[in-house]
Length: 223
Image (cartoon, rainbow, N blue to C red; front, side):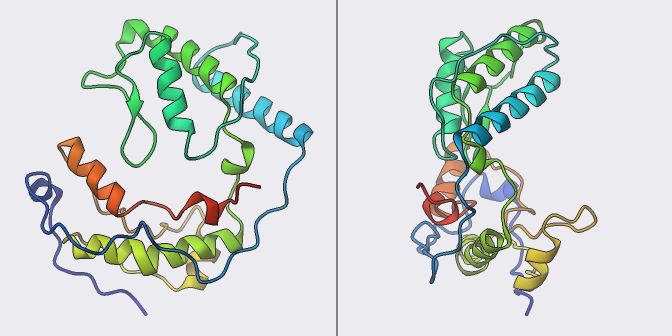
């Protein structure tokens, strides 16, 4: 059954003062049952995936002859952004920091065009030194997609609604899993209709109370 949509509250209002602080948080949600995780990969498989990912990054960053860089340690989905930000800061890009909800923020003015090549090289080197463990960059399995749906439906959507934000209607669990990777279907995402609010502290507060994804231990396992 589709989830009813409340009266939408534009981000322009939310950025000045949240519609409601809310008491429900999604951060404490746990699945009713553990899911079947993908089988663990071998060291050789991880090394091959890392090489492929770095090759794609070099092409994206327009580095025809990227440097050879030794892996210092693998990172997880929870540590990658902060590790990359620290590495890029050490390389001189001191405005780089983890962005609320994931990814990196590059300060008010972003990366200057004259620094683009130097930044691309630094990004490549940091990504090579602290590569994301390949299991976090692979497509979710149907079992993982089911967990994502349960979290979004049971925790994330109610968390956002309580704070006054509009949430798109939910598909059935079966349709969500079946269509998630379809190029012709728009994925259901409770955050989809929400543009990033300003100032950033309100954005971070919202992500802290209503995290965009379930706990990584439940979704990926750490074995």
